[in-house]
Amino acid sequence: MLIEKGQLFADMLAKDVRDALRNAGGKLFTRPSEITEAAWAKILDDGLATLSDDPEDGGRFCLEIAGFALVNARCGKPITRKKADNLLAGLAGRAADLNADPEIRGSVVSLQIFGSYLGESDALGDVDLIVELETDRQFIARLPVAEMLSYEDKMIRRLKGGSAFLSFHYACNVPEPAREAARLFWSCEKGLV
Image 1 (cartoon, helix red, strand yellow):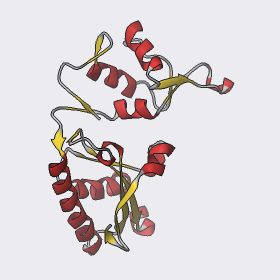
Image 2 (spheres, helix red, strand yellow):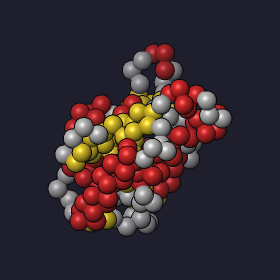
Image 3 (cartoon, one colour):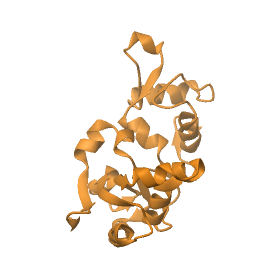
């Protein structure tokens, strides 16, 4: 999803609504005070968030798929599908290179595409990918804590290749309907699919 400069969401800048939801505390949250009545009504009317039906949640709200899309939206100009295709071609090569690198104590198991790339539009905000990594847990357990926590991030940065348009997500952080609609793009067994 892409937020254009100056884009409004009800009576607020869409970027400000996105930032308020990002800072709201995760999947379950209370209404952020910085969101206006009109913007909050639009969030609920458009199905970005719903009131949790679990009494133990204490009247908190749940982000829905459209809400996750807004929270993960980036600001800027869209990219074309042709540019996205070129980015994906480079990504496939970097995944294979990463798996062949003896210095890396892990591998890319699979990459799945989901989100707007699977649609028909030529203008895309980014390319969303579910990444599955496998790491040598015994090796990582011997690293200093800071390196241990950032080892997979290091692998993902290498996959990104400096592109702000490739967005990587772990499957556990992707809503189930989006996971089910995802399409395998690359795997260590098959390569480019």
